[in-house]
Image 1: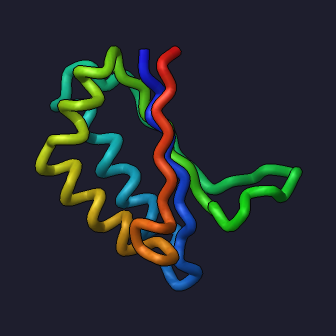
Image 2: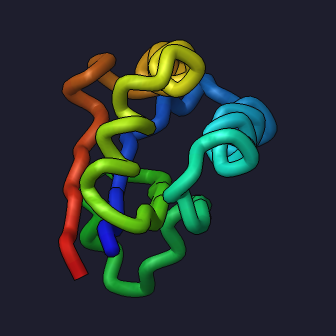
Length: 102
């Protein structure tokens, strides 16, 4: 299984409701993309306060690397990704991606 982890530094001017729409659109890809198991997201609520400016996170689980690659190359995912990047501080510099094989 692959855990695709995305951390973002959301613009303070971007409404929570608008971020939720973007995240929900990403999660809805599960209906169409085989191998996409689950998606969860939210605002960081860490009591440690060490987010270093990252305000929100997204975790998507995939069956395997092939499923993650299908997701990465999907045109709808890429269009949603453009919307997400527009909501971050510094554009792509405000997004961190990590993929864990578990």
